[in-house]
Amino acid sequence: MFDNLPDAMLSEVFRRVANQADRVAAFCEIKALRSTNQKFRALIESDQTIRAEWRKLEEETRDDRVKYAKIDAGNSAGTRTANDIITYYGVTDPGSQDDIKWRAAARDIMANPDMVAPTAIERNDVTDPLTQDRIKWRAAERDIMANPDMVAPTAIERNDVTDRDTQDFMKEKAAKRDIKAGMVAPTAIERNDVTDRDVQNWIGKFAEEFQNNTRLLDERSRQEGGRGR
Image (cartoon, rainbow, N blue to C red; front, side, top):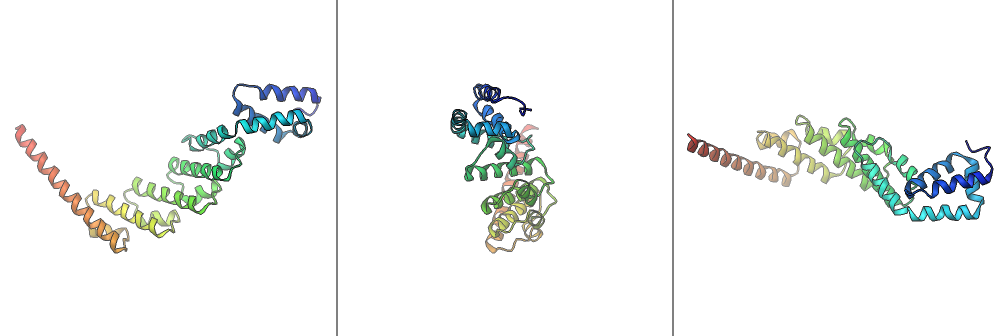
């Protein structure tokens, strides 16, 4: 829309946008104009004064842009992918980019119970292996806690959980969930494919403590009920 404007008018557009109170918004608006309009981009690159103002705005807003991008990525109502957010705010630091990708993928998983970890990872271009493992953990844990019928092996398989420690954690978590619902420890262990002997022992101890606490609460409830009659 600026193709027919003289450079003087384009310079005025730049300064009006750049001088608004919201500096991050100013950066994002100029960045969008710069990326979509060749003549506007050429002005910034050729005019030393404007180029210096652009670089100053870029530097001044760097920290706030990262902060706003992380907030945007973690917004439960948001739908933009991590790369769209990174591009919009012009985030260039690799560590911040990875954090934004983690937040956006975690947001997608919690907002959509049908989204599995591999889909969230691909959608948000998560390439860091540790971040991928965190997303798989989050998705498998969500499945186990949200669906009492889902056994640990299913949650592990559908979310491509390959880390052995994470697998054992999910199996333990699912078994404890089942025990709290009234299942005996051996059945919960078998149902959730708990093969690690230490984890089996922890689950057995948990079941014993849970049953003892339940009996104590039941006895206390009966005593209080008797006093009330």
